Image 1 (tube, rainbow, N blue to C red):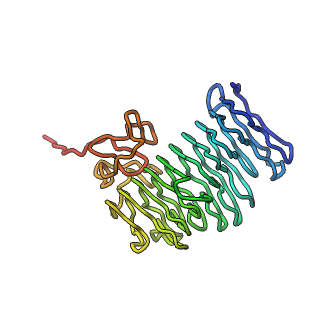
Image 2 (image 1 turned 90 degrees about the vertical axis):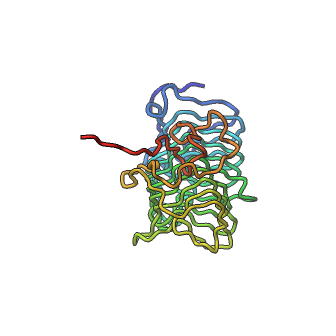
Image 3 (image 1 turned 45 degrees about the vertical axis):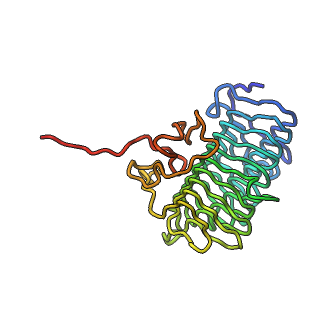
Length: 322
């Protein structure tokens, strides 16, 4: 089903604006820049903008904005792709993009979402088996004690996979990511977040080819991974600056700065001199045609790079003749 260009706005209270209950594809004609699903700030907190409750559905190419409750809820094995979820503002309320049931979110941007108070998941709330890949989660703000990304899996960490994602330049009074239910992270860059990167509670987290660097508390002290429960971090071929050694089970990891190109301007690609280049491990999804976050070949060189970006530049020596 194709949706023509336009801004589709709901003003009604207590309703789901787009309710997908069958395995259909809902696709915009020209992409998220031209097709917008929006809530009015005058509406009740109870409106959900998009709800997908049936397996086999796809939501493709929309901007979903100004939600006061949930922007998107997917509770089945369905897909959201090529979407922008932004400018959600809510005093209290759990979740913004709510995932469970085998949901897949791919090639999406979650930006400039705001939550106050103590509720969880102002950008992303994962309540069960789900995959998030090739996504940018930046410039979101949780001004209370709530984490912006909340993982709550009812069984094991294998139920949740976050892959090839940039999670950067967000603010939270606690850590930006709170892992209450495990999770597996692959080739993610978690950087530049104020108040901290990831907090691990009672179920362990696995990280492969990830970068945890440049996350700080309000005083500017490194706070990349912290622990508040019994869970541990199993890290393989990852970069963890200032790790808490007694809680990290590390294999082939590095502990020096990754050398971003221009972190001050939000550029977390790797410099050609980065120690994260060619030091990752080959994962099963890195077959021919696999790409990084921006579509570059995932393996360039003798091994994959750590983080969400693959560096395509080789170190060289410059000679100047005068």
